[in-house]
Every structure is written in structure tokens, then in C-alpha cells.
Length: 132
Ligand code: C2G
Image (cartoon, rainbow, N blue to C red; front, side, top):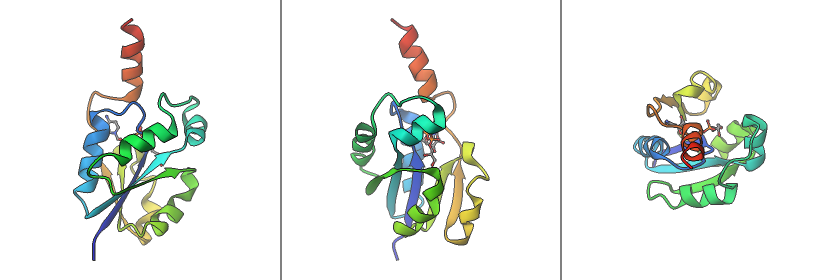
């Protein structure tokens, strides 16, 4: 049976930290499904619009060769539904979410991966906006 991995993220202003987590998630199974946060979810969660729209972020993630399928993550509360819909065997999240999704351990394996140090969308936005 092929092993399906699912992961979630905003992936705004795509950078190498995003690439590394997707590569590591893909290496844990045979098929990788990625839920990309909806613009509305982002606004609720972070209080600002992403730089790249949901359709742009979806296009970028979907074009990666490690990614087999992408979908829009409409709400954080639907995780169980998404795991079941895509028949995921493994849920991968960055360690900033450690402990938050342990409840899904009854239907899949839950893995938290370390973040790539010293890079973030917020830091990039600040760097770009102060470079002009
Ligand atoms: N990431 C990383 N290293 C960084 C930055 C990000 O490993 N330096 C990882 C995060 O841990 C996460 C993924 O990249 O696994 C996407 O990060 P975000 O876009 O910040 O995702 P987030 O807004 O936390 O959305 O359902 C949960 C949300 O959709 C997660």
C-alpha cells in the first residue's frame, strides 16, 4: 500500500524553509498532499492578507515535483476531515505546531519537523521593505 503524507501551510513568499519542509515531508511516504491555507483563513489567523494570493500559492506548491496533490485549507478545524478525505497515513507539521495535532494520532501518524533556522516570510517581507 502506498503511504500518503499530508501537510499544511500558508507558504507565502515561498522560500527555502518551505522547500525543505516539503522535501522532508515527501521523504516520509510515497504520495504528498499539501493543504494551502485560504486567504480568508490567513487573515483570521495572522491578521493580514498574504503577499501572494491563494491561487498563486496553490500554483507554486502544485508545481513542485515532490507534491502530488494540492487543495485549499479553508479552516483549521477541518483537519480530521482533510486527513480522512485524502486517506493520509502521516500528518506532518512544523515544530511550531508541536502537540497541537496529537489528537489525530488515532487515525494517522503525527510527525513534527524542525524548522529551517533564520528564515521566515515575516523576516523576508521586512528585509524587502527596508531595502528600497
Ligand atoms: N517552515 C520551516 N522553516 C521555516 C519556515 C517555515 O520549516 N523557516 C515550515 C513551517 O513549520 C510549516 C511550513 O513551513 O510546516 C509552512 O509554514 P507557514 O506558511 O508559516 O505555515 P502556517 O502559517 O504555520 O500554516 O493548518 C496549519 C496552517 O495552515 C499552517
